[in-house]
Image 1 (tube, rainbow, N blue to C red):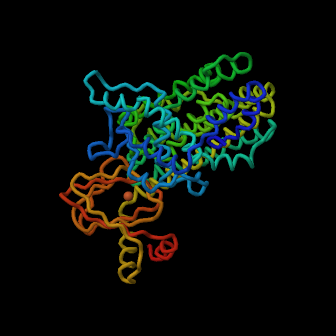
Image 2 (cartoon, rainbow, N blue to C red):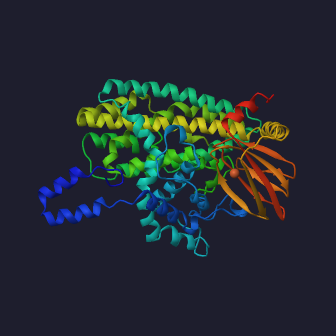
Length: 498
Ligand SMILES: [Fe+2]
């Protein structure tokens, strides 16, 4: 096995064509596989590259350095990448860090430039595009992809369809389901206490998920294709006869939209506020688009994306205008869009007729996998903003739980931190529920981009597991505690919540 691939067929072929000596050499080269411990160490080494170092207090939003993408390397001392994540663990910290690393790995293939000749970012430019960074990235990439995407393989295996009829049904149903989910998202945004901030968070996730659409789409179109493929590629790259907005141009329209809403558009300015699940959407498209062997899966994934965009855009555009005003540029969401039926007739049927079962199976798989990732991302966004929009509710819950722990003298695991002025925690998640209790000093605490919570001695809050947050100490020293709340204990405490 080589990175999880069965190479026996390849080696038999080599043996048939080559002399035994060549086959032995190839076998030695191909069958070399790092042990899990070695791979763990390679991942740690990859993350140690300077542009990926933890953020400072001044780097909450970075507009002048496209290579500055903090991973939070010290956490790799305890994060275990030895096993792939199962579906129920896909929001764990290892997924957030894994997706941050994958995004960095994929994007060393793209050209990002510093602002001008005098920019200090040139130093990180050299390190980001260094042969060492690229080589280490390529070594760990398949392992990280397996860690975060393997659960999709397991689910797809039970759902694969090899004929057009169920695939057509899948496409039509997906549109209605996507619409229902996005209605829930829009509802959450419109009913938030701080609607502009929650909408801003939504737009930041759009940047994380879809800013690279042009790059991933054009990557799939590189090559020499004629016949049916030429027709399909026209649909995706410049479908002017079907829709006014070519998918490849949407990245530019997305930037125009967020700029008109007052957000920064420099690459990854809001890196620290990307949820792992929005990073996953872009990473999946990179994953399938950069591999010509996965071309049909990439088409299936792209077909889902088109349907999702077409079914969701009206509600989202209206919600954005209702919050920011009619002056915002919502061209990203306007213009005719393909219907599920058009996708079926223009893309799926011609490819299925020409390439048969294999193509249908792969298109179905890409479609399903991208749909699953969108379901997970939609749900994760709602969970994050529902928590972050109600700081007083979670402060109260923290007080109830902390009082119960003290009154009942409950023995719970406790982490205590002593941090000095400006010490900053790059945004991260925990794999367990925690309270945050300030003993002395003061801290800025972020759950969303924008003004932080200002925590003083005696202040506390509740950080549910898998929720993104970060902090900076703003006094000379800050001592704080984090009691860990088990799911069983939380279940008991929930009976005390109003
Ligand atoms: Fe934390």
